[in-house]
Amino acid sequence: MAHWTDSIVGDRMTVDREFNDQVMNSRFSSQEWGLIMTATEFEIEDADDPEAARIVAETEKVPQIIPELDNIRKQMGSMGGGQQESPSGGGGIVDSIKGALGLGDGGNQGEQEKLEDAERLTQAYAETLQEHLENKGKWEQVRISYLE
Picture 1: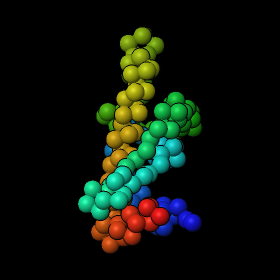
Picture 2: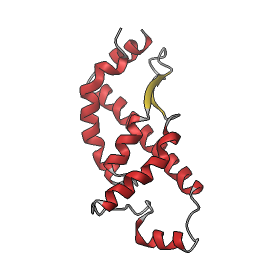
Picture 3: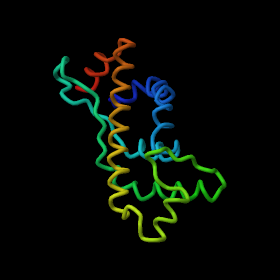
């Protein structure tokens, strides 16, 4: 028996392209987003109720990879990638100076904010995926496949 997500691989690729703007406007680079998505699984909540069923992002593994996001950012910076920071992002020279002076956000708060941002963004992705499936007339078939 195939997993329900196997039937929507092409749809996921389409949504990935469409969702790229939201990722670009987030605090995460595309490499960081890729790692977040690797740690995220999708489920269908209330799948047995056609009216209430919705795709949700299961992010219970994401906290494990949050520290690795900093490593990705450091690697990109050391390669001269000139990682662009979003206004809500953090990082950059000002934050480095603040950290050196002990004026930073204190790691745990920063990691918690990254986790919350990752959870919001993955759920927005899940909603975009469901909307795409509904628009393509595939949602009901996917929902039923999930129940099997």
